[in-house]
Image (cartoon, rainbow, N blue to C red):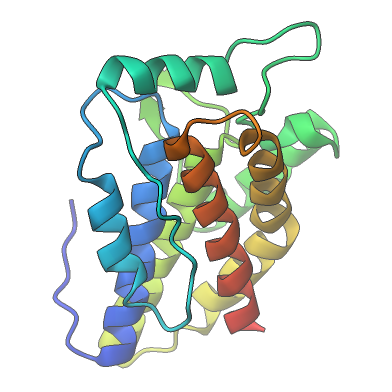
Length: 204
């Protein structure tokens, strides 16, 4: 994994933004390890951004088995209408193929491919892939600031991706998760929604 020591205060704040997107992306994937330190790590990173985000107080992870069960019940199982909260943006409207094609255009422009999860390529509109894309854009923005280059291309891409994809997506998944979710997933979805909204506002 590429690392970069950020000395400039603005670059360091954007670096924390990158870390937060990465942590949230990981939190939305099917859990394979303990998440007990998640709340503490998220609070530390979220407190060092260029703008304020609201960190939910109840990010208790529970046991691995409990978190795995909650993930399956929220994002995978369901009745005729699907799970309580879809983890793919295209399921919320706009046409599944159209959403995936537009998301892929963003990824391809920056030479990024969706992550491989347990040997299977996720759909590009998986919430974790979209948050991971914002992590990479933020990392590139921080590197540009640190190196004295223009970060404008990364900021414009972030602004457009948030406006056309993640702001509405995280609101939709949050609205469906909070009434049914565990404290962990209710908190994670609420934080993702607030981060995307506040980040877009800071870019506007």
